[in-house]
Length: 151
Image 1 (cartoon, rainbow, N blue to C red):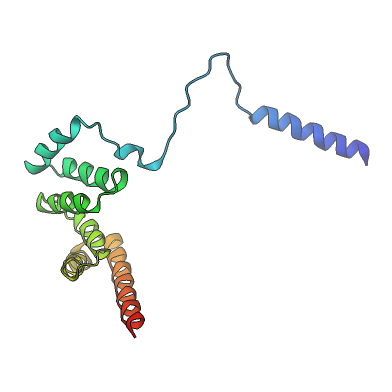
Image 2 (image 1 turned 180 degrees about the vertical axis):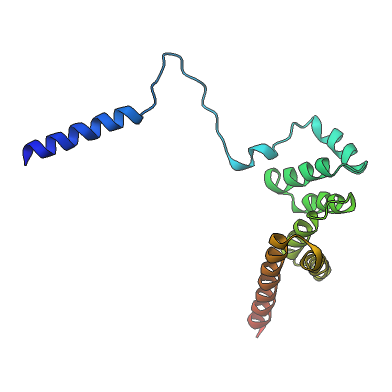
């Protein structure tokens, strides 16, 4: 039995050494990677992107909406740039705009969220139409919860 344990241990050690990365003498600087890293913008590029977005660029408006939503956590500006995306012709941005407005407490924002989500549901890509239905369910659940908590 002892021989089996030693053999298993030796095989495990060899396997571990085989799959472990080899360290060279020069250490590379560690780089933190996070999903939102692609949304980070150089502050100098923001005015350029703003001009491009206001001039009709869907990509610039998308980058700004993502930056404000994921990096700055500024929902007001995210909604603004998502609306510019829609105005610039990005039909898929209707879902983003509807979902962003759906989490607002303002009844007018909720009404507008329903408008955009219905648009996506009626003529958007199937995957976004399915997501829109899910947001509708969440909105309805939230409304029911608010009404129930008032009683």
